[in-house]
Image (cartoon, rainbow, N blue to C red; front, side, top):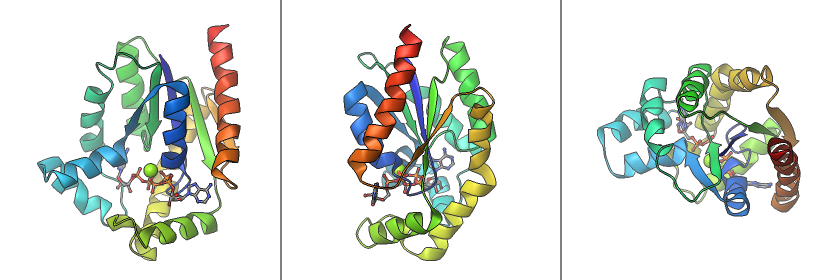
Length: 196
Ligand code: AP5
Ligand code: MG
């Protein structure tokens, strides 16, 4: 099983690139943002609790997020691995994930970190906000808060995997196809090494 984390700030293109990577490498998508929005759409207690944080641009508390992960990592025959998008997002989430994977005799193989300037992130998310209907894209102050949360709590996750030498930084500006080619070249190298 190949475990790939696609990492980067809000609007860096994780979801866009994930769609293409899933097909190319036959990976199962695990996006905590999508899972939480699914819970909100179904009006579950978890969705209601998460919505209060998401609408303000803040991260949802670790215990709520960690609780939904275990199930998703189970029972996925037919896939070559997992693509984690938007998770882990705090150091405690990264530790919880490592513990969970250790129990399964697995570990994270690679973190691809998308590097995008703050001006470009803001531009992309404000543009998407015109049509997406996502509550957290609707105004600049919420988007700015999401980026601030990323700096406060999420960059520590990259440091965590850097110490295990698992992080590759990829320039995340330019055309979607060019960025995809850059990511694939990193993933291919890692897969060759893993199978050598
Ligand atoms: P989540 O859903 O994970 O959102 P995010 O990380 O804030 O970022 P996005 O999904 O908006 O951006 P993306 O990097 O996927 O980029 P995309 O491809 O969409 O999280 C939402 C919220 O849920 C969080 O704020 C938090 O509250 C909660 N949450 C989720 N996971 C959590 C966790 N683990 N712990 C705690 N809380 C959690 O692209 C963005 C836009 O740019 C699109 O319009 C796209 O078309 C465009 N675009 C993409 N690539 C390019 C390009 N190369 N050039 C120009 N435009 C581009
Ligand atoms: Mg996304």
